Length: 418
Image (cartoon, rainbow, N blue to C red; front, side, top):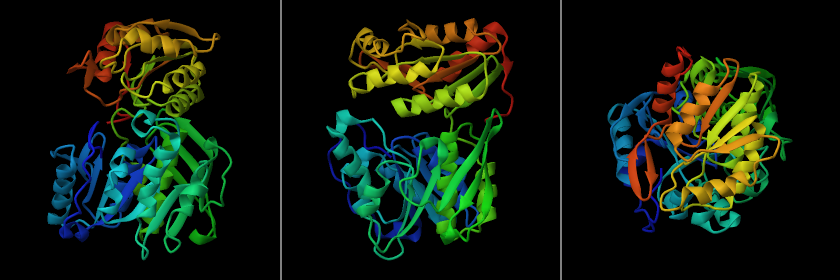
């Protein structure tokens, strides 16, 4: 949930009636929406419906509900779940919402942390403030019955737990692709297998979960989504779910729109929301792991936002063979300036070009790709608009890519992602 840019008014205390549900907050730089989706599915193995509120919309279980993207919309989603006998609500919460005191005004019982990397420094001013905003979700957990689910392979995990109430239960997870764990893990995934049908891995359980191992599967594609699925499963188990029922629920959950969404197989064409350096690099690593001939990426960066992120995005794009830099949401900035800052940092080993017409750049990438290539269209994912010169207009990466595929006769992806 986000209050919108420029918002500064603190949130009011939550109405007493919202305590009729148990509330989970999900925060981090990347993976919040997917983790929220998977968490709602896993908690659904205990009781349904589960309300969830994410960047891509509000849901009761997997059914969209029409509410506004606002605090009022959250209240409406929670009320809908209560009226239908639900027990849980999972909310995606941004650093900006948390900086306005939301965690101290909403009765969260559990908090999930995905990861922390470079983003939103235009809004927060420093990495320290950015982290401190996210940490409020954990610091505000109840002293009795609170649950903190934390990515133990992230560099800030130990610091985050230092500000978490000592009485709260802590469950740590990790996936080897993020690096060495900084703390002992309760659930550790290894031997990750990624295909166009999804991702699976063996998960080793620590003593707090009885030891042994389980197999975790998700329909989402990539190790980053394995992290999200593992966090969701651990959360549900921590709140009382039967472990195998929660595993089955996660395995059956469809990923959110625009998260490594496969549109075609020959060439493989993917739309992904990756808009930070870390997310872009991991998305391209996933594309590379699928064993295609070439990895082609089309992406840009937002205007009137964190300018320091742009060179890092260019460097991350070095994981591709061909890079086409285009416009994202340039807003009031000159798209040429944004593209130049990205291009300067793209490694010389890449074949790089600039085309500021995003639709044309996508069509070029798709129509010029070989059947064995993979084209990643990154940055906007599920979004249906583009803002140029302060004017918002309809625009969909998915729609443009599908039109380009129809032009070249690409093979549809079928039912990989609904």
